[in-house]
Length: 364
Image (cartoon, rainbow, N blue to C red):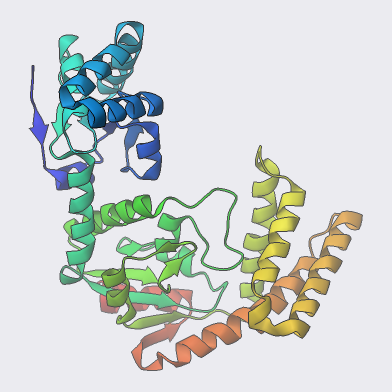
């Protein structure tokens, strides 16, 4: 049996090496790696049976049961799926949880069909540990800069124009506000951390000494930024993107109303009614922060805009809703937070001015 193994985790990241995860689906759903596909050697029920046997009768009996469960046509189909993936990309690497029996047995099954594949030494656990350690130690490898600015100023758009930026909201699949919840779920915390590590490794190994992040707190939606990493970012200097109110209203209107409705209406599992319900829930979530009177005003504006859309098919009424949201909720909250960090501000300017400053003073 071939026993090709590798522990060159950095190579896997930098070269986007495809991975076959032979763990059970329930394990994969809790967390996996970029460019991985779940082709389990044991399904959830089979894994449970083998686990019970291991506890009651020991490893030898558990392995015997595993071979019994994965035999005949079941074994044939699973091996065919592995080999099909390997032939599509011969660089593919195989892993299980600890790089132990499941991946070794899968590797031997594949070898029996005359195909070679490399196995990940230490499996998921070792690779995951490497990625977490990289995040933990990364503050020694780069200098952070934070891009701030009021809601709707175009921070994410600017950020994604830069080669040395990391989009935490993008990695977390979240827009960074009470109204930023999309129709697709956020990744698991594990996947968020794994994907962050991938991005960090690629940027640092590309030679970028300065990395730029959007202004975030400790959380991005329901996900949290690893503690030591978040603390490092919190000490970084600020670059403030400024945009006039009309443009911010239009940008936020396009995102929260136009694009959002289109996403819901194109979805197989969501409808316009779902969009209305989710927007109303978002308004309710900020009730304590804006107070009862402003909450009532905001609700009334939304209801009027909704009635206008239903009667005339026009979205224009929502611009009043967006304007109220920006001027009465987001701006005061952001201005209060930024005042407490005014000593960290390096530069303020428009989109073009900020790009010029970053390229001339940070990325020179």
